[in-house]
Length: 205
Image (cartoon, rainbow, N blue to C red; front, side, top):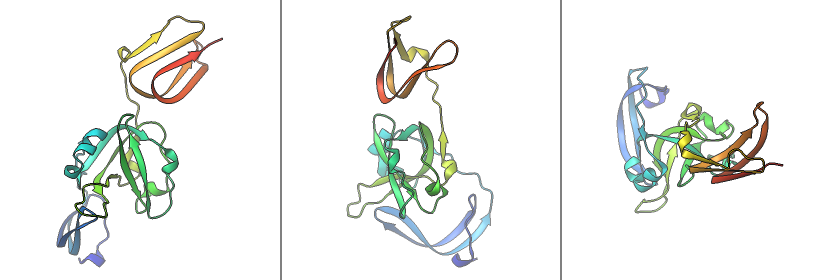
């Protein structure tokens, strides 16, 4: 079939003829004709990277299928659902990168994810000027690209003191924590602190 007669479905295996070019630093392929070979091909296995690794070698991750684990939105209000798409600051608590939600994907009309999550997507770039060394982004493909995750942390990674206590309880971690909740022995929530920090102190009276 020609380009006008082909309707894309995830998992399609194709033969394509066309022209290789670049748009704002990102390699792209403009097809003249497309022939469908088969359907139902499993999606590729993503390359697991950290935010720091992506930032340090973003050029090498362009047009690669990536997985970032245990990240979160630095500013959820950036999730606007407007325009041709919107950019978000994605962070692991130490480093920050850009995630782009295009208006062609179903994520565009979704609500912003809360807390930490895993996300898959393609390494991309949108840089207006030569030599095209900035503007790198992660481009998720659909709502299924974002998976809410709970990271299992060993108790040895936390220090809690004094224990027991009737006044002040301090919790320290070797990594940044989004929030801490304290429950009493009957399962009632006593206190919660929302902060991206390594140390939390609770006051009890």
